[in-house]
Length: 217
Image (cartoon, rainbow, N blue to C red; front, side):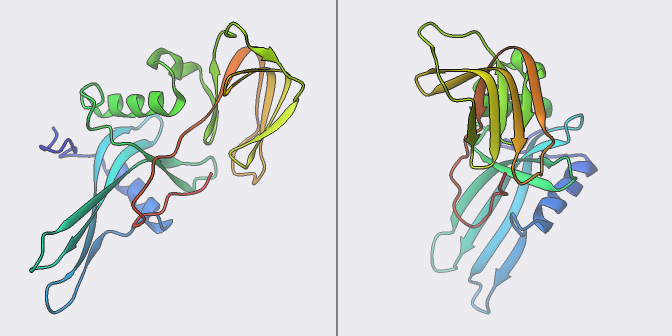
C-alpha cells in the first residue's frame, strides 16, 4: 500500500536498518529542531521501493522549514541506497520515481525503474549488466559510424580506470570489447569482461537541495 504521495505505508525491517546505516554515514539525519517560538526544521524519510535480493531501496528524504508566521517550505531529495562490497552504505541521488505508474506498481518495480533510468537501458538488460559502483557495462550492438579509437585506457567518474583491447566512440558514447575496470580507491572489486561488445555508462547523479549529502563513489 502507498499513501497519496506514493510512499510505501509498510516496509520491511531490513529497509529501516539500511536507512539507519545511511544516516550513520552522514547522508542525512532525521528529527526536529525548533526554538521557543516554534520556528525550526524537521527532516524525515519515506521508502518508495525496495528489493531484498539486491539489498537496495529507494527513499525520499524530506526537509520542512516551519515558522508559525509563514508558510512551511518543503524540499525533497531522492536516493537509491544500498551496500558496497565492503558493507559500507551508499546513497546515490536520483530523480523522483513517483511520476511513473510503472514504478509505483510494486516495491521491486520501483527499483527496476530507477536502474533503467540510471543505466539508460531496458528492463530485460538489467540481469546482464556488469557493474562497478557508478559505472556499468551494458550489452550493446556497435552503432553505425562508430569510430575505432586509439585509447586503451580512460578514467571514468574520476575513480574508475577502464582498460579495453578495443574501444569505439559514437558521439558521446563509448563502446568497448575485452574490458577491465579497476576502482582506484579500492572500494569496489575489479571487473573483467572478455566477450561481446559493451556500452560504457556512468550513472547520472540528480541534483540535491543541500540538506542531505550523497556518498561519493
